[in-house]
Length: 144
Figure 1 (cartoon, one colour):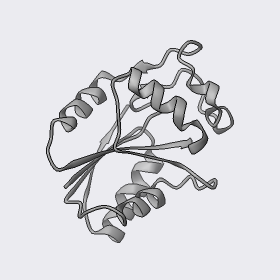
Figure 2: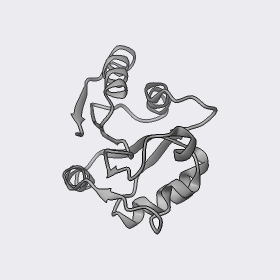
Figure 3: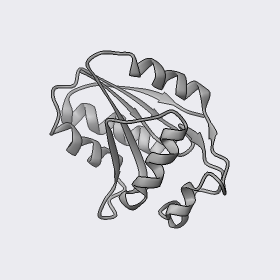
Figure 4: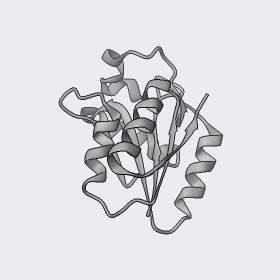
């Protein structure tokens, strides 16, 4: 099975305000009548291609907190996205690689991982941790 992983902020959409965990952890940060979330069309085309594949899971791996999941899902749905899983922050653990490793423990064997992300620190963490601990390479698509 192939796993397609997408980040949200500044990957799927251009976040219309400064990166602040204090604000991004609030539901109103996802209010599309207050903010204009510009869709990254290149990332959307990768998502659309992934949706057509067989034997795949498509996952959102975001550093948004679980408490904003409902408005996040609603906004993503409006933008044409639905995910098999939403790996969001719980218990203040902002490590994307830890969340991904926990997820990988509970699913069938993964052959390939494709990852879309804008932040170098998350790319480095996932690219180094997942192959070492899970034994599968990660193909990174850095979003600029």
